[in-house]
Length: 203
Image (cartoon, rainbow, N blue to C red; front, side, top):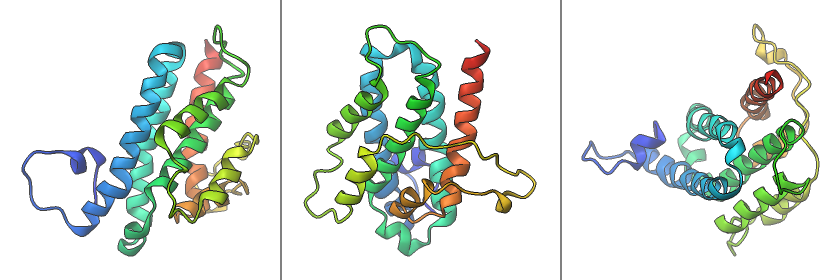
C-alpha cells in the first residue's frame, strides 16, 4: 500500500518502502507534486481571487480522493504500470473543467473569456506533459486536451445506491488513461464541483 503522498515524499527515517509504496511515490506522488506546484506558480501573480476555490479542489482531488481511489482500485501490477504523465493529464482535465464551470460565476479583471483554457495550457506546457518520446498515449491525450467540451455533472449520484448512478460518457477515456472504473472519475469530480459552485452562488 503506498499510503498518503505526504508519507511517501517524506525524507524522515522510516521503515523501508515496499515496492507498492515506491510505485505510489514515483507514479502518483511525484507527478502530482509537480502538477500542483505549477498550478500554484500561476495562481500567485494572476489568479489570487480564485485561490481559495483552487485550493479546495486541488487539495481534495489531488491529495485526498485521487490517491485514495487509486490505492483502493489498482492492483500492484496496475500501479506499477501507471503512467505519471497520464495521471497528470487526468487531473489537469478535471481541474480545467472546474475552472470552466466557475468561470460563469467569477469575474476576473484583465482576463480574457477563455482564461480557464489559457491557464490549463500554461500548466500543460510547464509540466512538459506531452513531450515524452516513448509516450504511447500522446495522441489520445492531445485529443482530450483539445476538446472544448465542458463535462456534464447534471446526473445526481445516488448516495444510497451509488451503483445505480448513470455515469456520463466523458468519464470513460479519462478513466482508461489511469486504469480506473469510469464511475470513480465522476464520483470524485461531481461532488467537488457541486460544492464549489453552490458556495459561489451564495455569495
